[in-house]
Length: 155
Length: 155
DNA sequence: TACATCGTGGATATATGATGTCCAAATTAA
DNA sequence: TTAATTTGGACATCATATATCCACGATGTA
Ligand code: SF4
Ligand code: SF4
Image (cartoon, rainbow over all chains, first blue to last red; front, side, top):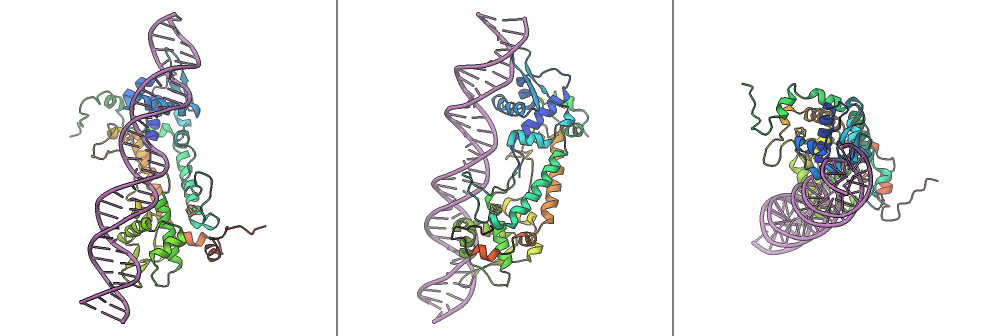
């Protein structure tokens, strides 16, 4: 019941791209550095986002990434499924497809599937735009000062 | 975003105990065998349920386990927290307590915490009784035949 | 008291998956 | 062609979930 680092990376990247949305592409290197994501790991995450049709990628010099949809069209559910695959709260079948002995008569499986459905609805109702909107009002300032001690001046 | 085997074991055990609720204690061995849970692993799970105040344990001959509350008083949230600890969807602090650089200005963290809250509400609204009620109507029959091929006669 | 029964506690192993690294190939601009 | 950049996959590393083991503590019975 946890947001993996991979998902965290993906969401951060998308909000970052969402704010740059002037049609210009952004280098993977820039994303990695600004978001403190290991470059070679980010590469893997980006591939998944591209394959899912969420971001657009371009090769070569002047290449990079940009959003393929507007931030308000990208839901958390899409992002989740891009990097984690289909959400499944209970795994009633093992890797070789053999079902749990209790599957045919299990009240628990039903319950988890209902919860899963509700959770999917929630994830589907939240967009990258929502996340951008929830950032504090002076984001650029902080982003550009995070090499220093990131101290709060709220006295 | 997954129900661990441990949690699955815990819920199965509690529904099993819930159905035996005549005040009588049940041996760990019986639970393990009927629920196909490794005995020595179940031991660990039971300890957590006892510590959480959900089940009652008794030493010695005639010992065993029984529910400390009625099935309708035990919520999934309680069970989750007993075996997994506090639900936290995002981990914005590493093990040594150092916070993520973005914590002070992160829209994502807010969003996950709201989702977390909703999920906790859902988990808190579902009880072991609900799960028992959702089992199919001939549970004993199936439970006692699972040494055979568990074939369905629904033609 | 002595003994058998059964849960407790913690140390330790094993398996699985998440995270991170590396390098060669593909694509494109200049 | 050459440099810049993403792509793809193999591989290494690390963390955690799962499982096992064994000595100990508590309780009933005789
Ligand atoms: S016990 Fe029920 S929920 Fe758990 S794995 Fe088997 S069928 Fe699925
Ligand atoms: S980026 Fe935001 S959500 Fe992710 S860890 Fe940092 S603060 Fe938490």
